[in-house]
Length: 320
Image 1 (spheres, rainbow, N blue to C red):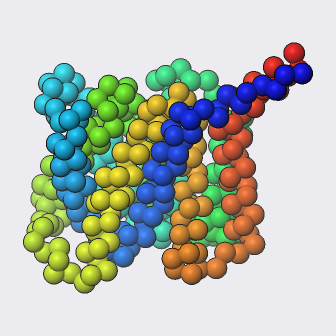
Image 2 (image 1 turned 120 degrees about the vertical axis):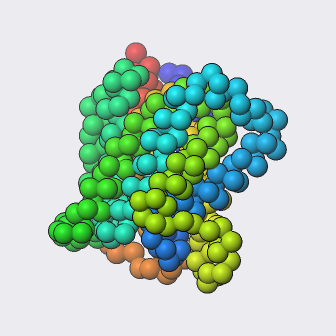
């Protein structure tokens, strides 16, 4: 019997999933740097979009294929502005603001519902089928994330008073992110990930800066950056360059090219796994038996979803 070639093993697919995975790595470390920045989540949003937008603008102007930033705005002004301001700026603002009210564990847990949201949005927008493996792996991976982040002590995600505000804000962030990741896909394919990420953070900055200044009275002064302690300004710069500029380009490029955006987005379930590994290697935190079990569960369910179609094709072909 001839051996069927594994359909998902092409170099192209490997590069796409690797790109999306590296983007998840950028997301996974963002909570660390938000906390280390020493400033409120509201102010972090302005710094992140300002520095990230500036870095992306310079990168776009440096690369010939992304240099023309005017034509797309003339062709699709409303979708680009809507996705940038509502889909990304407002969603990320809710994420940063949530950290002012709830713990990192609570926020990180609630945000991991985003891949499940993408499944349902993709069903409506792209008519993507919701298969039993997708449902089972999504629920299983989410429960694994809950178990991992709480180390089995589920009361950690329960909230009251201000904690509930943070939980609701993080759920709002996840739902908005679900809509954004599906709707932005055709525009990333048309204009490229660098240009779309540039629009996202530059336009997002111009929306956030006056809004936060007028509502919260926080007018960010860029000249104050290096007057802060080194750990704070280095964390802010890292958020702008790595967690924003680089990570989002990799994330959007990978997801835009993967045929099933919901499947590719299941890699987001690995976010708390990567965060735990970073805490182990950088902060020397200990990993418990419960967390090792949770890591195995999450990785297993993500693998089921990512490799279900190619594996089922191999089995079907060999049976025939």
